[in-house]
Length: 153
Image (cartoon, rainbow, N blue to C red; front, side, top):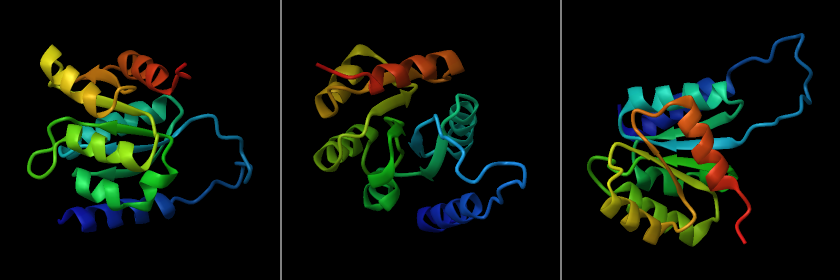
């Protein structure tokens, strides 16, 4: 399945989820609208589950940075969870640099690549980003989200 087909199927599935009759239509949302950019689908689903357990709403999952950058979902996102190694194409660091040119959305790098040199390179692209090392725990992801979304002075 191509990334575009994968995205379309995912968005259709999310849009088609019916609201239960006992759930108020205008229920107050406390979580963030999140976009995940992760080339490994199982890892993306695991992160999606953690985010939903934390009360956030995953609005899109992308397997590459290029597709994420062109998606309207990025403009509406309140948080981006971004892998550093995205396989072929642009890296997560390159995607973060491009994202910074179009939106101030908070970024959490969620990656197995968490050495100091990689972190420094990532912070050049997105100085206000936070990090969570894979395999990520719910507590670590929550702390990284709090760091990324904190008001910076």
